[in-house]
Image (cartoon, rainbow, N blue to C red; front, side, top):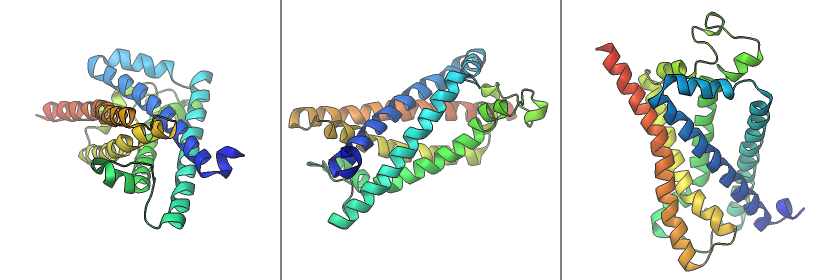
Length: 230
């Protein structure tokens, strides 16, 4: 099959799955910002995205996208190392400003995946997975009800160690996105000089907004925890 048997096909798969994951991150970031404005509003979203059939289908689809993206990343990295030594994620033109991110995409992606595992443990495992097990009360779920996403955010980001780990994760995600965004679009055909520069600049702005939104939630809730402890 062309999408798996050729180098170009593998890059197309990486690009399409990457773009889909970026769209999900945008939605997730916007959803998290609601928590800053309204605890009730955020918990309503959590209830809507709880253990419902459509949420389960979306979660399975998201898991498949992450798995495919990561597997193809390993595949392309091994292929690039074999063909070009230490050069990775080769594109037809690489600006100097993204050279470091370009050459370390796999390492950055690995950090992102590890951070995702931590995030799944802190939120998905204690929320949707608990509901799937028939756990619905706070007493059964370690003190916080599975649908009380706001309380999970409050608890998680009142812990300094989690704040630091999540911010490190977000830094790696920012570098990964700034290169991955324009690289994916270039693979899909926007490779002329005019559009290349436009998409490269857009990738920085867009990645900063998305990652900045996630970081804002962490910082706001950590600040709240400090104020509450005073």
